[in-house]
Length: 225
Image (cartoon, rainbow, N blue to C red; front, side):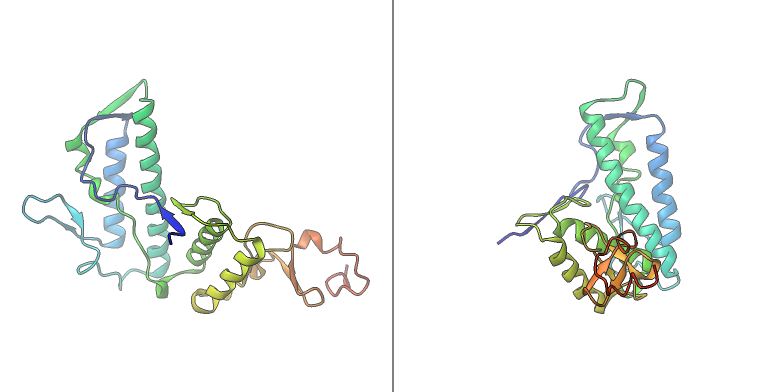
């Protein structure tokens, strides 16, 4: 039974099938982005005989000399860029810009290999990257499309989704962020940066703005207010 759907952005394609009118500067911007990612992440280009160029991410991509912060930040920014280019091309195919440049299939081949989603091994996740991944998962569990993923089943409630995130944290949380959903809200927050306070009496994470509104006479969070 299928419960998840994933949008495949540029997978299984080697270039544009025909020329596309895009905003001026798109071609050089795409080439520059791909070259920058290759440099920062030391991703090798590979070309076998007459096959298209591709990134070798399995056997030759060595990230041991790249610090976790650079790795996570660059991967996150690159994946966002891939999705934005997909949206740009889709928009241009429907409504071409009035003053643009022609992007030919042979032009697109110069950067098409870089339209590849990248992953970071869990043991390299930074605090920000972990939080970003959990926020993505939370959005999907709540029934909202996120990064091309959507739930093909009944969405979880805020409490159910929060419980799943808490199950993940014992294996994945690198900095003890303790992500949870403040009572009455619909997003993840962290106790480490004041996103919520834990009420031992109620057994709930409480948003700081909601502390004073508590009507319980013996509320421990209200004691010092």
